[in-house]
Length: 130
Image 1: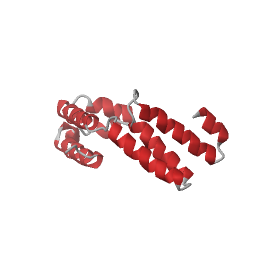
Image 2 (image 1 turned 90 degrees about the horizontal axis):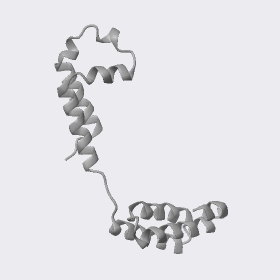
Image 3 (image 1 turned 120 degrees about the vertical axis):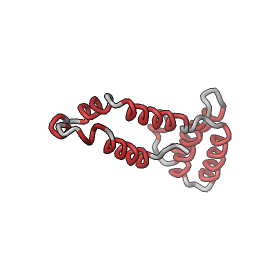
Image 4 (image 1 turned 90 degrees about the vertical axis):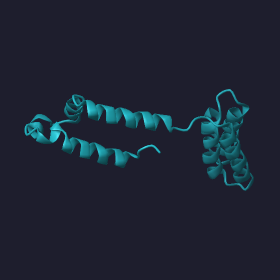
């Protein structure tokens, strides 16, 4: 399971306390800005490895396009639209568009449906731009 941000910071803090950083008395006087801290951390290969591992885990766990999720959000948005919950359907159709693959019909339908919901909300200009 990927490491959460706070867990990562805790591990990084423990690593920093146990490394040469803790014994560097001049650290407090040398580092006044974030860029100086990052430059200093970049000299510790173990910390760089830890940061790299966290970034890799975070990148690999991201969600991609999903036609199945796009379709589910479209169907939920349709029910909301039919119930005249237009503001809610705008949000749901947006989620459908986010998950829809770029070459799918679902992307076009999600945007068209969102535009219709915006129209019913009286947001005519936004509707035409959408």
